[in-house]
Length: 59
Figure 1 (cartoon, rainbow, N blue to C red):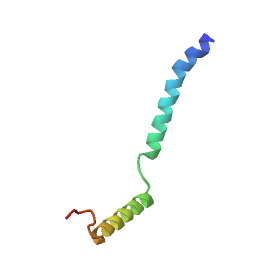
Figure 2: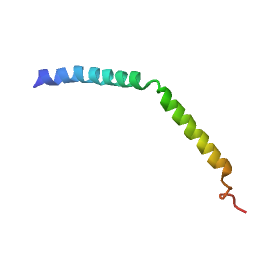
Figure 3: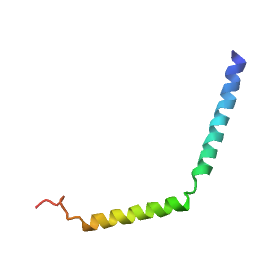
Figure 4: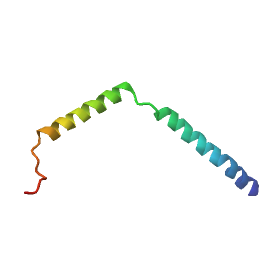
């Protein structure tokens, strides 16, 4: 039982670090289509906010 625990103590964090590095590398840069869609959504939201009357102003 002790050799298994020792191996898990050493190999576990190494595997966790490897998985975190892999995920970081994979998600580091968004695809061009995702960037275009995000910009379009932000532009639409800005237009909606500009067109909406301010209903949250207390008189």
